[in-house]
Image 1 (tube, one colour):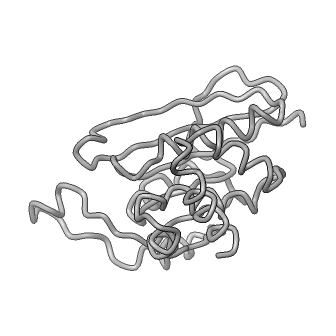
Image 2 (cartoon, rainbow, N blue to C red):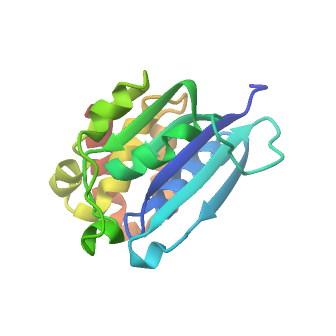
Image 3 (cartoon, rainbow, N blue to C red):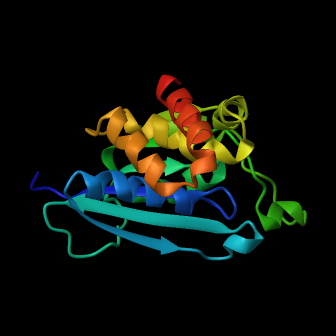
Length: 191
């Protein structure tokens, strides 16, 4: 692989985007690629936007993804999918959970949550997959496993085996949570 693949993981603070990027980075690194991961936290502790850039290939110089360069974007929440859409390259793929988490302006009444986000994204010509990740995470045993459900969905777009992903899950989470996260991953793959 001579080209560099660019993936963005976006969400709000507390959704587990940093664990998802660690898992993805471990899968890629274990496969022998050069991988760079850059995390931008913003106001993550207050439910603010969180974005992680993951770039990999034979040799990657920078972890930063510019506008129009992302091959894949995984969003844990609909509004964040819309916010980061300009980073998706033409022909790229966007995967999003169908959750709606109100940002601070909506909570305070200064703004309304945007309506019809998936329809508006699809209208741009984007290849969009929307998954009820929260229900699948709860089915796996924890609402906090939305991140791993979405990594399961992402895994179908990548060349790494299920075994590679499960080895990285075992490497990335505490032993007590491996089985539940594997179940969440499997449910995401099946979604």
